[in-house]
Length: 224
Image (cartoon, rainbow, N blue to C red):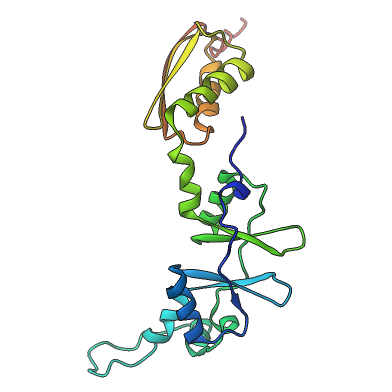
């Protein structure tokens, strides 16, 4: 099985900001390119951080409400520094959380989840910016056609990896949901097949209706 890589899904023509770009220019950059965040790069093109609409809005939230109805929120020291910043390097969230182009969708998604970020700058071995991958980019794997998913499961998982004959197990795919039917020799093979099918790009869920001929999962009786 070949998982789609970050290089296949990322945006290569990256909108980016210089470290000294002023606040208003950042706002203009986001608006003109219809994006919600941009990586901030140093003079060598290496990501230093990411500046987003949320980072910029801290400046507005730090202002007193003229009516006096809404109190000024309490900000931590680092939030206060951002709210008072005027250039990209002062406003950005840093350091940049980056991905590599050869990573799989799973690796990139896990890093996003762990770091609570919505996008990852993609860098080469010298940390230079190559592209950017977003949560929306990773979700594109779920747009794979059902027949492409079925062919991969049938050919790569069931036949080549598991060595099963076409008459033993069949796979039907509808809207990314996989339905497995048939029988295998050993009971222990069923969770393996299910796990491999779940790992195929574009699979939403797996339902198995598989019988087995030998229950190798039972414990051997204890000797007297």
